[in-house]
Image (cartoon, rainbow, N blue to C red):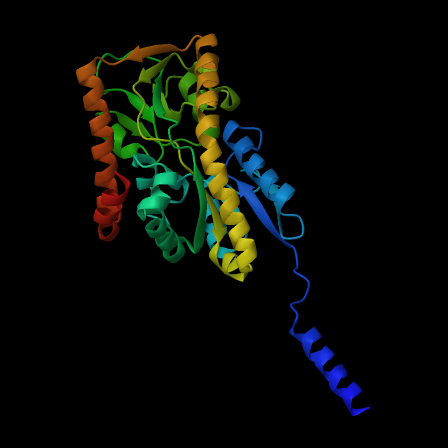
Length: 320
């Protein structure tokens, strides 16, 4: 009898010592662009990978795009936990992360950043300044361009009115352009009426944004590089179990690596779309092209140094 009681006690102790069945966690996500946009589709693909492979572990529920939360308010929504995950470029949360332009002017890919310590430093800054975990970043290698309704001949845009956003305002001003910040939804009309003569945008997405009918020229070379951060609210991230964190991190790294092939194919398609729409290419002469690229880089790093002086030197050493 006593032996039976001992065995029973041992069995109860063993049972109590076993971990409870792991619970699946659902995270709420918002995109900075519509989900049918080329950039939005990539985020949808990332979410699908998580949901297909993370059953019983972690799932992501897509809440929508800018119709759900304004693009420039999404960073704060992630910081305060209104949403769990957000996908947005650094320029849209620069008010929280002053060194955001470093993400676009870096000559190191996210893969290289993870290897040389840059990613670790960027994540520390996101933790402290954005209350977010930097889960993924994709877009490297997709250039920005200046698109105009007027031809230009050199890396001097004095007298040209360019619609801008914070990410490339320093560069446009260095080129001598007059910069105007309009609402995204007003850009088509502004171009149509001559309120602005051009704008900055990535190589991708002009057709989806509806800009092709009012775009006549694309300036080559491009400048900077696309970057879209996938951020997780830090409090939510820390509440995840280690196996959930590991799964999301691995999915993010795999996605960044696969993006390299996706980018080449998609960039070719985007150039074809622009060609078909009659967008003409203006190639700057070699000397002007070199000056153009150098001015973009210098203006970008000067902005980082001004806005984030304590982080500038280390970030530049790691990312350039």
